[in-house]
Image (cartoon, rainbow, N blue to C red; front, side, top):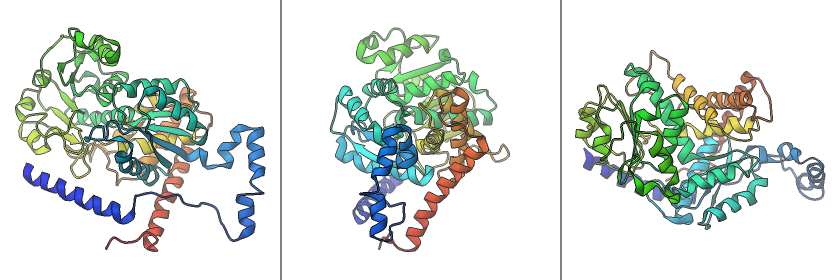
Length: 442
């Protein structure tokens, strides 16, 4: 079975390469206003454009009404940690960032622009994002290696007046929480009482731990594992400035002070969330057998999970999820970020809080009716597009409740606005495909 999946992987790579070459990328700029002749051009550009310029000069907030800034997000990456490919640089990372922009538009109606930077230092990346802030209503950081991604995110939160989000941290944590809420319900356990092993202590792993704590999970009942073993207070190799983020978690997780490897971490645990290196083989069937009854296993590495679902099931796992769209229970950031940003943009949120992430996770979980909840259906899929305006409404409402929104609107109106924007985006794509403005691949 594993050999067959690897063969499928190779086939997908080849097909994707051919399609990318045929279409020469996945996104392009589109005009949203009518242009019927020279007079329209005189209104949209010189000399008429001086009018909106002067209006914005008098009142900078008018930029959100007179330009597309209100719906624009930058997808910023240095290509230092792209999927399971590692440090491949900005050019090689561009196909991923274009794909992210496609998902932003198709699923959330958000106009996203890939910006792959040659900058490598934290300071240069922070400065670059500061420089582009005037053009965008939000920033999505993507595929930036740890630990610098932590410091970049925190630095920008203190400098920008628009929401900043690192999808590898907050996006992953949001969708994992949504999946765990329903998985715990299926096995008859309370999320707040789960004993959870998190395999991988990079950007995703630490953020998952943080959001789970915010959602009520006892940090002492969680164990983090990095490439050198279990995080605990004896890990003096982490008690230094460059690994400060990990050291903080050494001090608050793992109440019993366990040491050892992944295998030791999983003993007696209710759930394992793996966000480490691509597998298979990172998690082994014998590790799953040592977990508690009805274990939950999330193997989220891309493009290949840490353990194949059928192997985990054969070893006793009750609920298994991966990061892949071609397997049941996809725990993928694409379920979160389009709706989160849609909601944040629509209420002019100044930031994206942990509570807004929890609201998104709870909405994802509640989207599955209890009579449909199943071991192979714990989260909506990307094809369930109706979930995105619901997430947007939940996130925007939480932003207003917390006082971080500049625009106040009723929740029903917020939902309807998001629905309209997302439907329009999808309809535009349908029209272009039907009219063959988007060519069919031969």
